Amino acid sequence: MKRFIPFLSDRPLVPVIRLHGTISAGGRGLSDAGLAPMIERAFRKGKPVAVAVVVNSPGGSPAQSSLIAARIRRLADEKSLRVHVFVEDAAASGGYWLACAGDDIWVDQSSLVGSIGVIFSSFGFPEFMARHGIERRVHTAGTSKSLADPFLPEKPQDVARLKAIQAPIHDAFIAHVKSRRGARLAEADIFNADIWVGQQAVDLGLADGVAHLVPKMKELYGPDVHLAPHSPRRGLMQRLGLRAMADVMAGVEDRAAWARLGL
Image 1 (cartoon, rainbow, N blue to C red):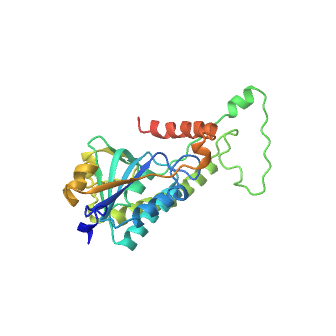
Image 2 (cartoon, helix red, strand yellow):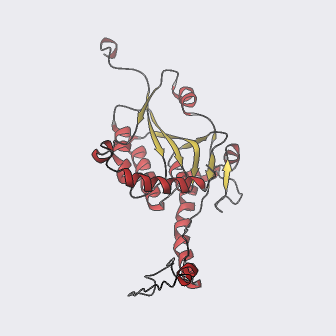
Image 3 (tube, helix red, strand yellow):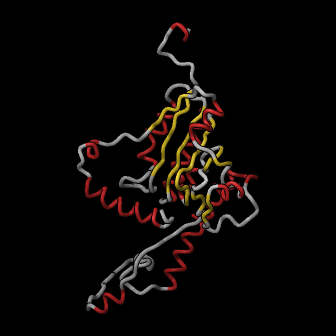
């Protein structure tokens, strides 16, 4: 039938989902709610033979990383589609959590991969406050309500509490990586938040090879493969340029996340 209808194509279809930026629940970062329509559309539109995901992220929210990756895996299983992940500059921390949603992971020779850990960072200003005669007044119901207050001296019990919060998140990250990468992982200590470059990540089993999107997809699905890009649809406020200040603040946070990787 298709040969009699010129606008119907026999070319293998591979939707391409691009996940670029930090991962967060709000702002312009990657979030499950913000990406859901794009991801659902990529898996359900047409009759794809596979789905490609391009990841370029220094990380961010563990919960959002988990939700996005889980959505990709659920749709892949429902549609019986293989997911190929391609890493650009970085798939670090939450970015690597996303990458592990793929059935295979391909990197550039200069890609930064790993950082399987959890971080909490802040600033402390108690000496500044004292020097300028500023008194901090905090009244709480619950002993942990003012946890890690940056205007008060750091307390050993606060540090212990933060580490207790980080531990189960780190455990969940490790379990996710092990469940997705399985026997491909090397016996080396790869869960200490180190970062590896390109072929190093492949040697440790964190990735499957050095390859780029277009040639790899042509190799796997033929020279006529149709790569269909999918991107999030911008809201009305963004299209009208009415979120300038929020975007500036999000840009500062985004820049700081990339700076931790030296990018």
